[in-house]
Structures are given as C-alpha cells and as structure tokens.
Amino acid sequence: MRASAALRIGGVQVGGGAPVVVQSMTDTDTRDSAATLAQIGELAAAGCELVRVAVPDDKAAVALRAVCAVSPLPVIADIHFSSRLAVTSLEAGAAALRINPGNIGGPEKVRRVADAAKAHGASIRVGVNSGSLEKKLLERCGGPTAEALVESALNHALLLERCGFSAVKLSMKSSDVPTTVAAYRLAAQRCAHPLHVGITEAGTLLRGLVKSAAGIGILLSEGIGDTIRISLTHNPVREVEAAWRLLSALKLRQRGPEIISCPTCGRTEIDLVGLAEAVEEELRGIPEYFTVAVMGCVVNGPGEAREADVGIAGGRGKGIVFRKGVVVRSASGGRQELLRALCEEIDILRKEIQSENVR
Image (cartoon, rainbow, N blue to C red; front, side, top):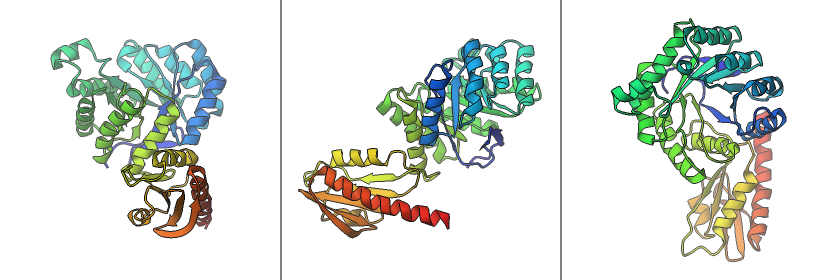
C-alpha cells in the first residue's frame, strides 16, 4: 500500500497505513437535523465510517451543531465559497472540512480557515474535480486532464501549508475513469497526502457501480487510496454497501456476508435469480463475514461451492443445504422453503462465529 501521512477525522485514522475508510454523504437537507441524523444512523448501520454533509447557508450551519452533537460518525462539512461557513461549521463540531481553498477568498480567508481547523483539531480535504478547474490551467493543459487536476489540488494544498496547516487530504475526481486513474497515480507519486478516491458524477445505480468499481478498484489494487466513496445517483446507503463489497472483493477489508451464486443455464430447474436476490435481501445488514453459495444444481452445486461456509443448491421442488461442501440438511418445496432452510443454517453459523469472537 502507498505510504501516506496519517491524520485523524474524529476518532478515525486516515492514511499512515490505516485500513481504507468507507465514506458517504447525506442527501437530506442539513437544515432538517432530525432527518439528517436519521440518515446518518442508517449509513452507520450499513458500515459507513465518515459522513459528509452539505452546509450551504447559515441555517444549515446552525443545524450542524445539533447533528455533530449526537452523530455516531465523524461529520465532514462540505463548504463552497464561504470561509465564514467553514469556520462556523468547525465551531459547530465538524471533525473535518471539504473545501477548495482557491474559491473561498484571498490569503487572509484561507488563513482564517486554516487557523480555525488547527484550533479545533480538524482536517481539511482539498477537493478538486474536472468541473472546478481554473481557467488558466484548462487553457495551459488543453482541458481537464489528469495533470491539470493534480496541479490544481497541489496548488490549493500549498495555500494551506503556507499557513502552517498540514492535516490535508486530497481528491482529484473526474467522471472519466481513465482520467481519474491517471490523476491519482500522478498524485501518489508527487505527494504524501492521504488520498480520497472516487469517480465523480458516476451515474445511476448500475452505471455508477460499474464505473466506480473500475476506477476505484484499479487504484486500490495498486495500493492507492486512503478513503473511498462510491458516488451513486441513489440512496447513499447503497454507496456504503457497494464500497464494502468492493473492499471485500479485493480482500482489503471484510464486513458482512459474501454471496457466491452461479449464472443461470439450461440445467437450472428453480428460480435461481429470485432465490439469490432473496438471500441477498435476507443477509443485508448482517455484520459478520462468511461466504454463502446459492447454486442452481443439486448434483454439482456442493462440489463447485465446496469452499463456501454455507450454501444451498436447488432442483425441481427440492434442495440441499451444505457446509463446506458437506450436505447437512435437505429441503423441499418452493423458493420460500429453500430460503427458510438456508437461513436456519446461517443462524447456526452466525452463533458459532459470535461464540468464537467472544473467546
């Protein structure tokens, strides 16, 4: 993994060899503190570790105090253009800021924010994306290139460093995957700041998942990235679930069950798609890590998925439940009966895991 400087956001370490941290952002009106806290609670339950909230005006900054006071997660205030709102957010309890120092005013305002962040023990993420690049950089680099993104981010970070502030994290996002990957690779070579990785404006659920998995996955596999957000035009809870699935697929961190399911084929005699989706829904929110196989062939299923901790293979009106390839029970009936038999075995497995963790 890339060596990066360490900083803290609330009680969470970022960089310095710490595990990759999962982040998301609320889509509620921050001025509605009750709704914002409710969503933060949902995100925390899904495994979110840092949460960003928008602070567009004074009313949001006032409400932020109530949010930060009881939030189960460190809160990052998202600020645009206003140094005053940045300082107010820190006074309200924000553990970090996400700003672009170049658009909050001159050197005095940048210093004001840096001094306030230092006084409150907060960090700052310098967030740059392809739509916010300076006109001179765009002209010199011929557009929103990877080089332009990195130069902009480093220049903005330098504004803070000149104020004696070093608890800085960088992000350089584009909606274009190759540009984003190239930018982070370049930044990883040129600085030791922790990096927040993501694909901006990635799109709706399926498109956003594919683009994010491609870009973020490439970078994480190269050891680049200290925090991640999978940005989706969807419920932010799904962002968190997807982030954990990506970390699990890369064997970087594990949280929640991993589902293994075979593709459908002409030999399938059950509603395998419906069964796999039902299993996925049943397991949502479970924190323990174990593997679950959902197979469509009673004959080959247990052997093909013998490494799974628990699994089910179904045929016409019947099925078998197995543990590490060994059949432990049979079930008959439709999808609901097969699902019930599997869930009963999963309950047994979870109790075993919990018992092991207590020892």
